[in-house]
Length: 182
Image 1 (cartoon, helix red, strand yellow):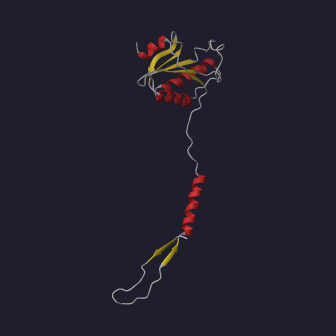
Image 2 (cartoon, rainbow, N blue to C red):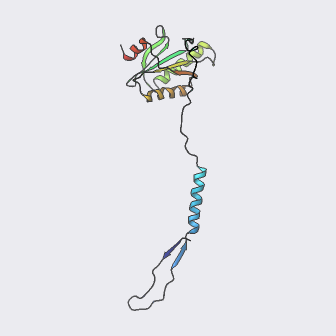
Image 3 (cartoon, rainbow, N blue to C red):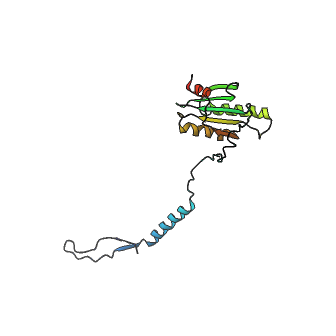
């Protein structure tokens, strides 16, 4: 049992005999029980924060037989984003040899790539006329780009709601020259 003792023990002071005062006792058992009940209640009823992650579909391991088959995509629906060093980002629409738009260096954020993605997504929708055939974005991070830039561009894909995008680490020599600024 938990208790709190207060007061002095009485005794003689100055030669006078005083009556002995009884100690005041406060039983703290109920308060300790209540504290543990409250702690238990709040531990069980609060929700723990869940880590936020983005789902990323990775391709299955495939045989070498199917690996050499080229995949045909409509160049009018394709946008390629090249991520370079020092937060440099370049995009072009279509093929690099005959681009529909670009290649152009662009910034991250609301007034940069997001604005361009929304504009291009709308033009692709007008071109195809079907919602299921939306824009395709190919993200190509270079070896010198940092992880944060890749996460930022993936966040932009989620914000703009781009239906199909892929991360590719294969650069053509022309794209490499474009990133290096030559």
